[in-house]
Image (tube, rainbow, N blue to C red):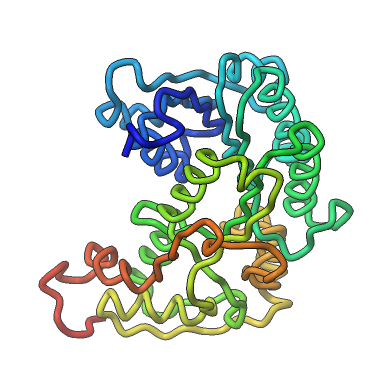
Length: 316
């Protein structure tokens, strides 16, 4: 594949590339023969990718995304740039609002042929919203297109993968507790396989003439409620569990408490659902058929079963 790819030999900088999605994007690019520079506050988290790269094919750079000079230094010499930076903590306006614009400006200055910005499906695509996360994401998209008009914005739904913090968080809880509360039980999600999103990134980088200047919403092939996802996880673990749908007011109060695993911003987004709007092109325009959760869940939940792969019946 590498010899036929437009990315073969090109230097692609992954801003925030040491995280969950960065691991998969890097692999998709390495397979295409691209040279990859992982720019991150903690680039050592991506050292596990070294064996997948040829000699000189992978670089690592320490970067502070809230420092404009640091951003510009990491993008020097780039043929293409992908922004993967995202968080629910810290100065979100700077990290996900202003910093993407700095990245896009630096990429344009370096003469990069493509810029891909990973945003998110946000229920309130208005930078004046009271949800700081959604507002920052909206501002980031605006700053990117201002600086790099031919950029591509990808808005994925909640990502899932073998080593994610979504399925595994619920998987651990369900394997331990016989009764669990479910927040936003009726909220619909179009969870999307991380490998499919990584493939989308690679394809848009390969063909900015067709995919540049556009926004894509990337959702999985099925809409599942939070309650359905919990039940599917329990079934894959071969466990009997009781799930208690929580009222929205109680969920909001829980999210507002300090030290809880869910912030108010996360709760607000969850309560409104996370599905594609239909107003933007999706996977089909990229020639990708997204894979359903059910294709992987049974295998991935084996480690949480009482008797591992030997569990054949429901257990406590």
